[in-house]
Amino acid sequence: MFCIIRKLNFDKAKGLLILSLMITQLLYSQVTRIAFGSCAHQDHPQPILKVAAGYTPDLFIFLGDNIYGDTDNMDTLRAKYRRWGAKPEYKQLAATSKILATWDDHDFGRNDAGRHYPYKEASKEIFLDFFQEPQQSARRTHSGIYHVEYLKAQDKVVQIILLDNRSFRDNVLPYDSLAVLPRKKYFYPLDYKPHTTKDSTLLGEEQWKWLADQLRQPADLRIICSGSQFGIEFNGYEAWANFPHEQERLCRLIRDTRAEGVLFISGDVHYGEISRLRSAGMYPLYDITSSGITSTWDFATPNDNRIEGPVMENNFGLLTIRWDNDPAIEMELIDATGNSRSSYSIKRSQLTFMSNPVIAHRGAFKKNGFPENSIASLREAIRLNCAGSEFDVRMTADSVLVVNHDPHYNNLEIETNTYAALAAQRLSNGELLPTLSSYLQAGQQEKPATRLILEIKPSAIKTKDRLHYIARSVLNAVRDAGVGLYTEFISFDYQQLLVLKELDKGVLTHYLNGDLSPEQVMRDGIDGIDYNFSVFQKNPDWIGQAKRLKRVLNVWTVNDLSQLDWCLQQGFDLITTNEPELLFERIK
Image 1 (spheres, rainbow, N blue to C red):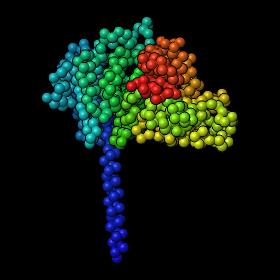
Image 2: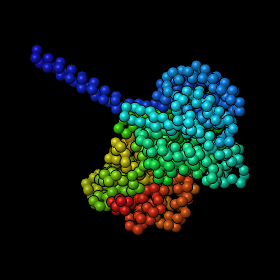
Image 3: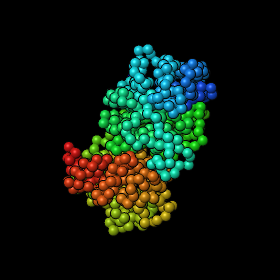
Image 4: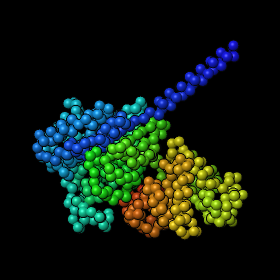
């Protein structure tokens, strides 16, 4: 009897423990959902809003062209808002989610209008009244409709920055045949050309000052909402790229305020896509464009920054944030049937500034006498908190990916021998010759601070099939190890990088050989140049060119003290070295 009672008490205690663990996991896995969209004609059905309501997002953010006002008659504008607000789809969404909004040109009042629109103050009041902006709101006291809101999830804070890209914006410049453009040819007629002087503005000084203050406020995640696309390349239509100095100013402002966790969401273009913009000294800036709720377009414009999409059918955007130790952020574009048409996931730790530019070449091997490319040297690089640890990958005769710099290992050619034959002899510290799988497992980090810089060595078998086979094998190994979010790829073989991009346009790739200008690399969609120190000495203008074109700028292999100092003075994003400890000392 006593034994039975003890068992019952044990089972009860075990059940309570399991329940406690489940509650703890639930608390620490809280989810925040933020939906958004743009371009909704007030007289058309809007089933997208009904689908969005079904997700019960914490917020829905309208990103402009919320109606097609296109009028100088404020009674007409007000009537169009009323028709939109009476739609059952809109009412259903408003009943399930808090709604925030900014505007773009058509609800501002005129197509492509800016600060010279004569009825912008009257239009502003109609906008604020429709979205039930409180009378005491700061929005009603300053020019324009820029605003900030905060969404809290227990102890986590999401900052929502609503930009006004209409009230203060100078006119866009009409396209002419003499314009200097990023591409030599476009398959459609262009409307505009970029401003080439810095005396034009998109946000206006008042809004710029306000934005700087907001970026200094504490937040775990920041969502900057813009009616115009921020993260795309110039395409001849309206976008931040028409004001490249303003686009760069915002990148610089984020960098100077050390504002981490920034994402952009945007609308306007009548299709959806996810773009990733690179800027010197910055973490990647993602721009999730959702358009339109009712509107569509015939084609998507060229965009080398695009990593997902385009989605040409009506869609809304959804950000799902899972508040784990390192929060997971999923970006989605969802169509009117509820299908997720594009999806891309990152970790919050990817939206942080690198604390240093140090890339440990073949791991941090030298000071402690570890073998190059050993797991011990990788772990030391992680312990030192290097920004990255570089390593070399080759494929054996039996298709095993191994980590080794030279084409041979202990006098055996890697590509013509099996892994078993190669692994018969260990490294000098007793490790087995690392397979890529074992190496990547050793590089797993809960909060990644050290990126894995994977160099694919050129194969002696010069066929396209071989390039594809190696690329697929490497990508699969990275995916299986769960380290894809903090792995980047480098190679001397340019075609190998292009194949990687062909298989997965979201991967980050950097070219090593030093024979191509940053402009050529950008045209081919390669993310960065990673050239020998001597290449930059012979072509110093490539440093500025890479920064201007927003290519990641890395230099190798720099071990001399004076050369390290020169690289730091030049502002390289990353410096690859056999002397990571020395470089850390110079940074101090």
